[in-house]
Length: 227
Image 1 (tube, rainbow, N blue to C red):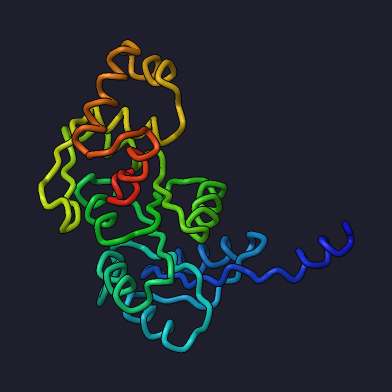
Image 2 (image 1 turned 135 degrees about the vertical axis):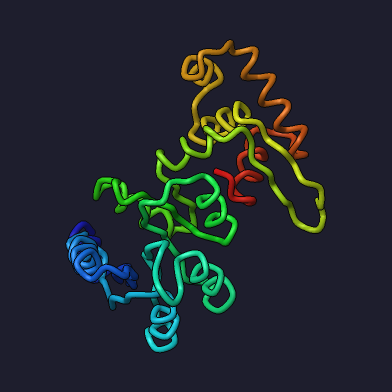
């Protein structure tokens, strides 16, 4: 039984990836790095988003596009929007130096599955890709910190909930830690507030988002891509 499982693991389908980066030396280095990760196959390299879209027309079974944000012809955010329209099954992870909250939120709202800063370690990028390919979202801890430092964030829900919902900085702090599975006591310690205050923020979030449980709270936040 063990031998059969081992043999099957050896023939497991690799994660097929396209890479986009307009600086050739960085592109080559990134492709080499990704190729060194077990279970990942870099299918092709590109210097702008338009090339990626053309490649997707002919390359079957691409799982993830790893793309820079700022590129000529077509950048990462426009590419993300096009992918959602034309290749919704393909995931996209933006790998960039851009850490401004407005840019991060624009990328997330465009439909980016992941947002990783170029300062990240190899292990973080590897984790991001494996989470994304399973249908999860991944945003670097530094990205979450940048969002948390905002005074607030606005959600624009679907047609069933057309109102804008404004979440304060502290509520976003609490929501982020809830999503990371910290307990009320742990959140209180991290934010230097009382457990009662944490509970108050949690209740306010549930009221604003119209959910009944903490699980519902996290699901809603993931659905509208603020965590």
